[in-house]
Image 1: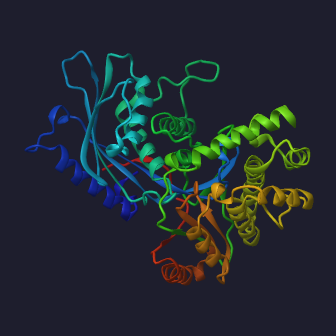
Image 2: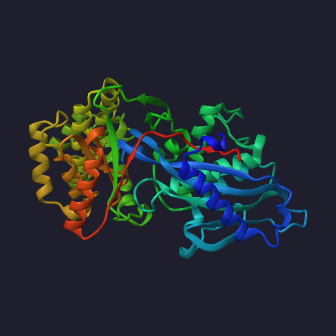
Image 3: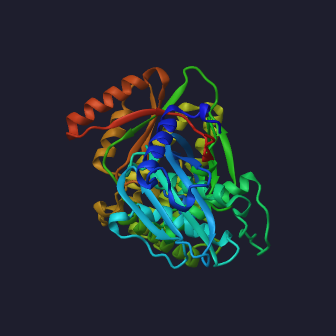
Length: 468
């Protein structure tokens, strides 16, 4: 991507990373063994999930879009022989952290300590690309400066943005060796087209976060950061990894998406998120053994399966609630994609509102996804359970959603991201967007004593190399 076509904020990040590189790695104008290597610059965006929450790690559907905020990696690197007598060090530094982190790129590398926890997201991705080298006698030597403007802990996937930007940076250094270790499901070596490279990149970054960072996330965040498309949201099948680019119908008035950051930060690795993953697996095992042997993941379960599990008592309490959310959310996600293409903004908004209800309370009252008997049985189970232990939303998020849903010109609003804080996404008529943002900021500060940040967004392109 030519530099003149870069958004102004990404141009600013490139300059910030360049300055950080010079301050951190240049000594009297020279930067050690890499002085003769070319510079590589990559960028990858954060994301907003329009709908389809807590479905990706159960093989379901998601409907995210890449946003204009992102991460830039700026630096030099090369493949070196470990037997050449060169200190094969990787050095990375972030604009968010003053300290340079130094390590050797080898498969025995262990995660960084809590002080340098951010570096795990880079190191984990590097380990995923080491198998592309010819043998263990080769490794990578890198100096990389990193700058980003995705708000940390906001639910806009700053971690995936960092991982994918790192991956694209490494692919540039590896050149033709990139993805050379890829094998088909049948174990055969195979070349990859552009689409397949984007998917494989996302999978590598997901594995890095799962195995090296200790976060059992699904593939959605890395996928849309890698494969995002200008003016289109992606309907991703997280089982097959196939995806469809979905355009919003042209209409007047034209709706836009307003993102509101509650500034209540979340940490998926240390929150209830891993517990949710475990509960979904437990619910799947029960459904498979007692209801339908064909249910391999919650993606396979239907409303009828959940009703049968409810009536028979096979699923109860929290496990029932988790399964019900995933099953209904998958249907809402597919319905939202169709409604976007038709320009049925009222339906899109309704589905967004129902999604938030499901995320907040884990049941629907007036949707077509639940029968009356299902609802009554759920209420009985809910009264016996611990509400506080299962809340993905929080009071600040709920307040913002409630404010938005009642505002004139708004079609729908919901929590976006893994939950436990973060952001909301609101579909609103373009002419009402500025007034909505002002209303949210004023009311939120008055009610909570905190500030919230709002911005209008539209689907952006995914990761790429930057040509300086």
